[in-house]
Amino acid sequence: MPYLLIDSRGEDVVLFDPGSIPDFPVVMRKVIDVIPPETISLVVVSHQDPDVCGNLAVLEDVIDRDDLKIAAHLNTVRLIEHLGLRSEFYAVDQHDYRYTLKSGRELEFIYLPFLHSPGAIATFDAKTNTLVSGDLFGAISDDESLFVPESFPRNMDSFHQAYMPANSVLRHAMERLSKYDIKRILPQHGSIIEDDDVQECRYLVKDFGTSQSPKSTRQRDSRYCPDRPALITTPSRTLQQSCSCATPS
Image (cartoon, rainbow, N blue to C red):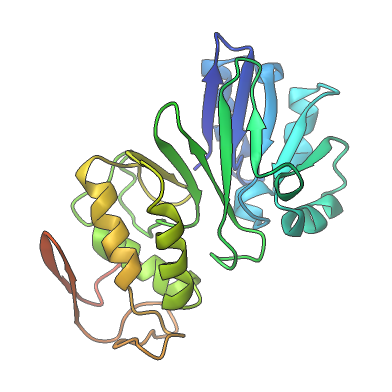
């Protein structure tokens, strides 16, 4: 799911994870409903997957400005530069993981290696206490609710089992994110997470058993679904996880 940040009456517009080629017509129609596309000055790419940034070359043509920048980790830049892009790359790891907008508002980029790519990043906006998290905190669901539905913990669990490599990597990320006052999470897959659900999903992700982890009590079948029930315990709930979760097509 792409996100827009509009700062200081449109002087700076940032587009996060613009999406795939098949989704481009819908994404661009929604962008045009809000702002003229040529006002976008920065595109942030959390990682190189085609569903995240496959439409970058087309997006460049629509935005059509010479000073457009594409922000990503250098490990991601090395891959997306093969898309034949003409815009300037802004390697976040070479700029102290920060980008300052014209208003002085600062975006901080958080390096999350192997969640789920070597150059994965999230973006934290301290002004709104919002984390644009990429695939971390993502979910698989047929429910297209803008905000998390009742099924949110189960859908998040199945997604992380499918796409995240190990508990140790997730725990390291949760330790890093614990330093931030996050009140809203915008994942690339799934629904927006707010208020009490933010802390809830931190506990969930920290304790997920993934198929690659020796501490996992569950295993995945070929459709990335847990093959037996398990309990996930957090400070406010005990979740019975069953294999009725949504699966990728």
